[in-house]
Image (cartoon, rainbow, N blue to C red; front, side, top):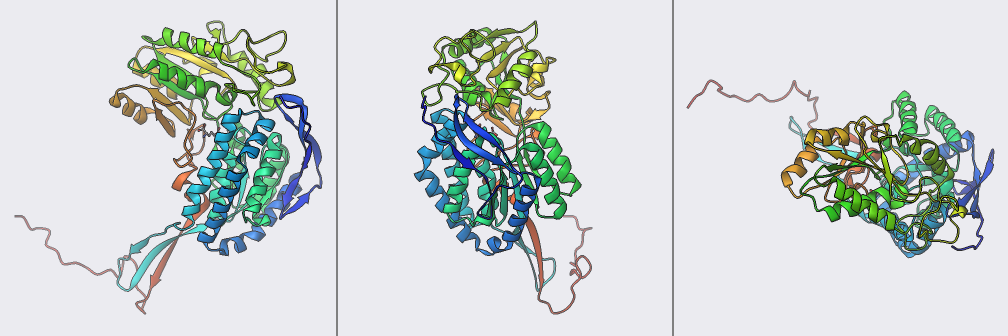
Length: 522
Ligand code: UN1
């Protein structure tokens, strides 16, 4: 691991100016090497947030007045800049949240893909012309920007998930206040710089670094003042519920992308090797810290023992450790996730469960080692043993609780109803996968799954950047990001009624009557 010290100072940026008022300072560290500080981060307070919202609101009309194809050109510039800085941005992700180099590069690619989709949308943003029921009258629809948008994101995807909000929001003519995760502040700042250098006016993209309490306070004030018109939030279900309630008080519908308990069903006709590979990637990639990470593998009794044996073997053999090397996963990205893993998720392992995948459970230390750990000293970082918990039943707490870390459940089923109960009854509905070679089973699963995203013979994680992304139930409020679908989050339809008859024509009342003989029979 690199021992190079590179501490920068990161502050909130409002209309291009550093905002340091009311702040306390935290250190963002490399989770693979806690002695390595990445940045000193000045955290703002509620007033910092409210100020940023005022700046965004003020800047919005001017940004919206720029023709959409020209805003699309800005997005094209961002795509190019992100591409040219791909390795640096990926290194920043790895160094600040511990994602492996290959996943970090993939994440940066997701930003580029998002930009490439939306730069063309600047030349579309289509409305419709609609026939009127009266002559000399034309109806049409326009997409109008929503206004100023609050974006609040987690740090597990410190650039890709923010780009799903920032790029379409800006392209549609909105301005933004972005509150990234505190533990990914330096990466967020780097990303924002690429946006500003690509031509986004500084007041159109304001960045506030703040803790949860200050953000909540500031967002409440901004909603009260009318300086935030839309909220986009990616994070936990518990926080999403609070944000949804706050927005509801202000008659707003936020875009909420929350947790998951994503099932992966393995049918008796499945390609077992493929299913094991899918479970390994979605269960342990990003150390299980994706909202789309595998929750429970639900395996038919005919294949269960072999699936479990092969997955356990794969997990035991997997290289884990230094994320700059070729490993399955690196550290937990922040101490809060390590603490929760040890204090809460491991407590969901009950007597009737069997545990496998590693020599220990919990943090990898000298006293609780993992054979083949990649890197010098696991105790310098926040590394956790991979854990497979088998014998999971539908009434287990573990079958219903999102465990944001490298822990998966394995359950056995006999009939379809049992499999679907395990797949749906937890009340989340983000992503679900099935491994089968029977198209009837695949489509039955699609129809009966509560998830917003269904994969057939592919894992629960790794969605492409231009399909609708989002969930139902405890995973969100039905909002969708990505592709054309997200346009409905960041624009509102405006209907236009244009009458050029020169006299009042009353809808429903002044409509021509048609002569018809409906008693006619042939
Ligand atoms: C998230 O964890 O919030 O589908 C998003 C995936 C990624 C995005 C995950 N493209 O796994």
